[in-house]
Image (spheres, rainbow, N blue to C red):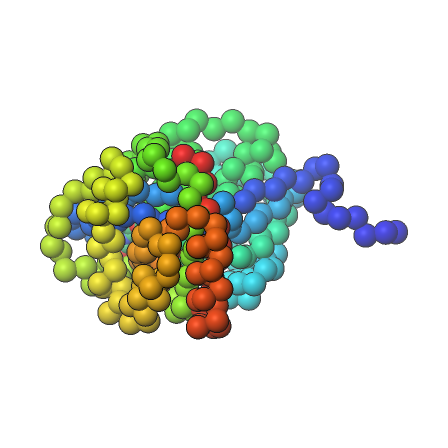
Length: 293
Ligand SMILES: C[C@](O)(CO)[C@H](O)COP(=O)(O)OP(=O)(O)OC[C@H]1O[C@@H](n2ccc(N)nc2=O)[C@H](O)[C@@H]1O
Ligand SMILES: Nc1ncnc2c1ncn2[C@@H]1O[C@H](COP(=O)(O)OP(=O)(O)OP(=O)(O)O)[C@@H](O)[C@H]1O
């Protein structure tokens, strides 16, 4: 029997788990629950991990992982895809299961929320596969239980995010959507908790996300310094990006180590991507653009 391309099968659904980028990330306070109160502008890249899924009748959640960063990940119960599926099943009392293939394109533990985006994409995928309805607020609560970045990854559009990650407001900034963006990771996994623990507890003030100029001029990533202590190579990535012609902004995303660079146009983006790849062939480089507001 000829091999059928899985993507052509009528009963499968596909979701993209787009990379999250914190254009600015202001840490305002350490909360009593140990988490930090943030103010951050989240944007999403047009590219990310890919999930394809089929509904099954036996209640099992079967995950297989491939892709360039697939080997770094276990497909067992600790995987955020499996955790998200189990959480939704138990919330819904759902008897059906799913077979899911995750193609891991984004580096793991890298500040661009790959795992969080996978968890959110899994929730979206299963809601479609199982044809179930769930209230937005209930879905957001399920998502927050899986990780602070997961609620914002459900909609994967530009949002102003506050609190630990639970305060979400859609927030278009003129000029941002469609902007050429380079993501660069030097290959060092940086644990989020360790970076927050290194924050010096100095509140450097609120985020002004009113315009691109404000985000560039007065926006910060307060986790940059503690992340550089954990992974000094981040400073090298930033220096390399800051030296590229046509640059609009270079900054670290999340808790690192991935840094992003926004460019004036596609040519500057392509030139910078090539320059970084030649200078640092071992770094991960992705050319993309900022998705819809
Ligand atoms: C740095 C960001 O990526 C910015 O978008 C997020 O705040 C982190 O989100 P995340 O990776 O989903 O983080 P979680 O899995 O919820 O938390 C990992 C660890 O990071 C720390 N953490 C996380 C979020 C937050 N607002 N304050 C924290 O202090 C906590 O020590 C927590 O145990
Ligand atoms: N499907 C998954 N993809 C990536 N990481 C996963 C996944 N499942 C579990 N994990 C675990 O989750 C942790 C965080 O992964 P993730 O890639 O989301 O980090 P991050 O990019 O630093 O996120 P953030 O920007 O939210 O801090 C890793 O230690 C990883 O082992």
